[in-house]
Structure formats: structure tokens, C-alpha cells
Image 1 (cartoon, one colour):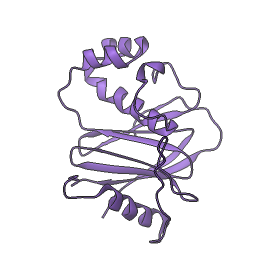
Image 2 (cartoon, one colour):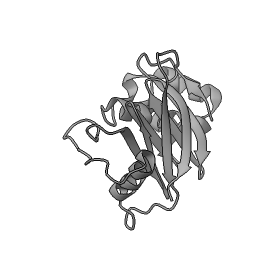
Image 3 (cartoon, one colour):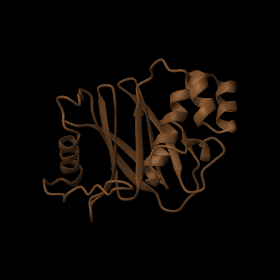
Image 4 (cartoon, one colour):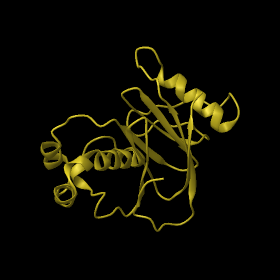
Length: 182
């Protein structure tokens, strides 16, 4: 596994991350992949319907919490017994300094200046996984720092999958199992 940030909460929760390495949104249906992952996770085909509220995170009443992400050909979902956020990003050429100056806190920008802007996607996936965890949606990135610390969450960079950065966020992270979705 990779780095863990901001630990120190109560009971651990284990998560399972299912990955699909040949995703194409024109050919694959994310909802169908989610159903397949849920069936594998729950060891049964019936798992309830996914509710998609106008605001906030999609959920399955009485089911596991989940977070879906995709980048390039990689699709992934994190499943567990408590709220979770997941983000995957394939590194690509971006104007990291300009984006970081606009969306990151001064501490995060200083971190990238000191450590190198090649670490941009580590911070980006951490921030995206946090807003997915909280359900507040993408945006407001400059309002919190994944470097200084979060009072309500732990962020863990997982090993890269298919070249993509993968970051998980939850209140307290125990074991993370990564499985390909067959």
C-alpha cells in the first residue's frame, strides 16, 4: 500500500476496491459494472437499487457505501461499511502550477514547490477522494488542505493501478483489498 495521512480515529473499517482495466464509456455501462462489483462484494446478485439524490452521494439503502471513479481505460469502485471516497487519475500533461495556484491551499502549493509538481496528481486524487467522501461534490478545493490535515477523514494513496494514481478517503481506513472485476 501507499501512504496514509491524517489517521487517529476510532474503529477501523475495511474496504474493497474493484477495478476494471478496459473501461470505455461508449462500450461499458458504469452502472452495470457497479452491479457486478456489488454482486462480488456481497456474494449475491440482489443488492437493492442505487438511489441518486439531486445533491449528495448516490447510495444503496441498507447496502454498502461506495464511490466510483474512472480515468482513461481504468474504472474502479470502493465498497465498504462506512462512507468512502475514491478517485483515480491517469497522469497526463496539465498546467499543474496554474491549476494548483487556483484550486489548492497555500500549504499544498508550497508542498508542490518543495517536492516537485510531478506530485500534482497525488494531491489532486486526495482532494477529489475527500469531496467524494463528504458528498459535497467537486469544487471548493481551496477550502481544505490534505497536507495540513483533515479533522474528519483519513486519506490513503494506494499503489498505482494500470499507471493511475488511486486515492481512498474514509473516516478510518483499515485493510484495503484491491481486486480485478472479472
